[in-house]
Length: 398
Image (cartoon, rainbow, N blue to C red):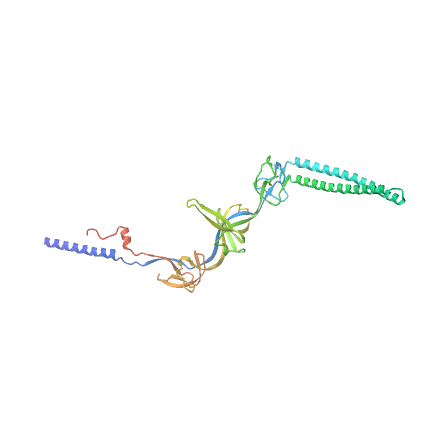
């Protein structure tokens, strides 16, 4: 009896082992197919726009370097960095002793010429009287022709002397006016309203205006700024003046500064990117686009970096799907899209698309709000390769 029970036990174990082996072989070489898992997105309404992106730099709307027009020592500086000044305010004073002496010299010369003119006018009067007397005497036969000619020559000389003196006075007046103007230059005046953004000199410093105009301060109008956006060669043909635009700054990427593209420079700005590793030079071509924006709170500062978006086209509150949901395109310009029904089954549909910024696409026709479109799908079937990677194989003991 014990022998029979042992035989049945061995036979039962062998049967279980054969069944397990068969199941293992089937799972290893003939894995079961599992349904696809879909990643979907809803068809929603929203705003969409296509843009040209550019990097820009904030510049003052108007900036002026105020320089010294005369040489000399800076006697006093009347402004400080960041100070607001009005047109006509005194910015600095230069030691004016040399210019004052020059003006006094020119004024003395002018007085001398005026005195000379008075004397020559008196000589002219005398010469005119002599000539008149000689003319009368010659007519009456009381004088000779020689005396008459001499009186006439003296008159012409006296007239020429007066003209010469008048010219000298005119020249002296011009010299005096120039000296007076040069003296006024010792006070450096603000040519426009603005904020002092740089001060290039210090009190006591000597400036030389002979060869070039030395800069004293730089004034900038900051209540309005200009953003110079570098538009790439590939995008510049898409944009034009008047297009809406906006930008953000690095310090506040949330706030958008709305404006318009004021102009695009006709000439390019070349920027060379030298790569030492490859010993080659590639040149990127950019065109500056100008954007003006009010800056009453002075939040925007000179040379800030901006991220600029120039809007090519836009649509508000339209149906949208992710661009990755779009499949192949047919000859009618429609895109193939997979749509899930209520039973989670996917069906294909052709849709008409409007704007597409490669993130979202506007749905013009073919879908309704709330429908679920397939963005991607994940197949959960187990492959033999994945089993080998994870260490799977036939049951042990064989």
